[in-house]
Amino acid sequence: MAALQVTYAKRAAALNAADVPYTDPASICPVCASEPVASVLRIGGKANGHRYLHCGTCCTEWHMVRVKCSHCESTKGIHYETIEGGNDAITAETCDECGTYRKIVNQEKDPMAEPLADDLASLMLDLLMSENTKFKRSSANPLLFVAVAEEQAETQNQGLVDPAAQ
Ligand SMILES: [Zn+2]
Ligand SMILES: [Zn+2]
Image 1 (cartoon, protein in one colour):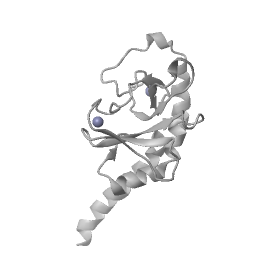
Image 2 (cartoon, rainbow, N blue to C red; image 1 turned 90 degrees about the horizontal axis):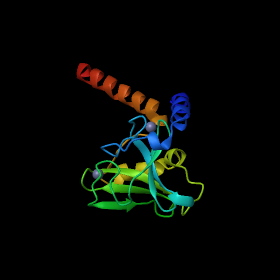
Image 3 (cartoon, helix red, strand yellow; image 1 turned 90 degrees about the vertical axis):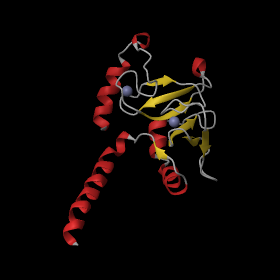
């Protein structure tokens, strides 16, 4: 996946931003159609204070207004969860409409915050979300796809083994 990211990011970087269309739904990457891994509140220049969704595959970032679900685009029932005493630059934006959450990293609080890396670095937040809330992750981190696939294979194997054992 990391190798694929390099290839995709290189190709995406070669595009002229003006040639990249607006997509509908706006919740998928306008370059490669992957789901965003997380979003980021940017600082500096024209991007200052704007929220961008970050593609986990080609690293393209595209603008989406704040306080809008980055999965179903609802503007109702958006809330934020953080780890008490944890890194407050990373919050989980939850949506009552579709029941999912996606993390936002805030460069106003941590100028070095980076969506893909900080998503991986904040798995504790995912753990708390799965244990304490009804919200599911809206999309996985691509660098964890192998782990997810192995987990699924394990569950399927268990499913096959269990009936035979009874
Ligand atoms: Zn992409
Ligand atoms: Zn939603």
